[in-house]
Image 1 (cartoon, rainbow, N blue to C red):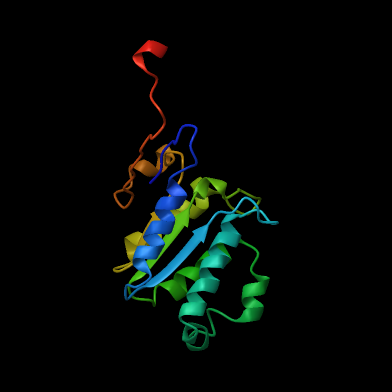
Image 2 (cartoon, rainbow, N blue to C red):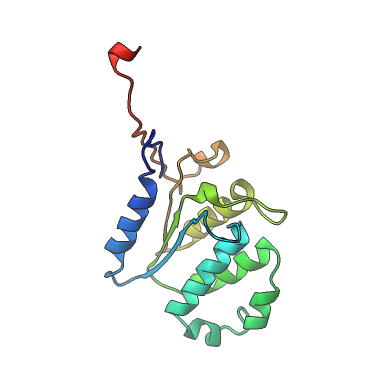
Length: 171
């Protein structure tokens, strides 16, 4: 979900915050990442997924104890590839019913030598949703999704341009 906002602040973050507030009282596990450009470290796909894992374990701490072959603190700290981090997330998250994930302003997530959005993070999210019976994901951006991902039936994109239209006199 995304769109342009002309010369106004972007509305997509406000929408994400509203979704979070609306879902908090629901009986589900809510994970959310808000891209913050003021952070000291850039948000990368690995940091984003690690943030989801931390939130997931904060909501369901027993997952770590029930799955020592999947998650241990030393193993988590040593994970350096996107594939390793994603595997931990996927194995833990697949055990959680009614999981809802919100990732705001995904375009702020910077590619690094390990992973990027188009080839790693977004396809992994789509595959996870395809395989899950009860998980949902909302990803916001001010840009359209990559063309390579638009044909996927699990992806529904909405693009809204709220920028000001020129008056007829301005033309």
